[in-house]
Length: 121
Image (cartoon, rainbow, N blue to C red; front, side, top):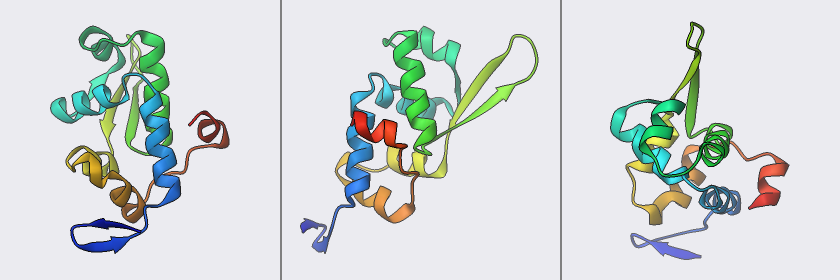
């Protein structure tokens, strides 16, 4: 048991696995903050404004979408692009101190990463 704001609770093991997985994807937290600041961002905007390379951005976005923290909208006209926005869970995380993320994930619901993603964590 860990203490948090004078209440005892158990950190959800799956939430901690998800946090570990996100931490291992370079650029994940930069992407979360950029999307939070701007409301949405395309992959081309992320490439221009963030330090990680294209492969790192693609991997981070894939993990964020699979975890249910970011949603993706495809634009069906040329030039084709994807726009990313935070989900309600993603907003809750970004607007909460990092030390409370396991509690938010455990109590507000999240998508458990696929076996492939958990094995990488």
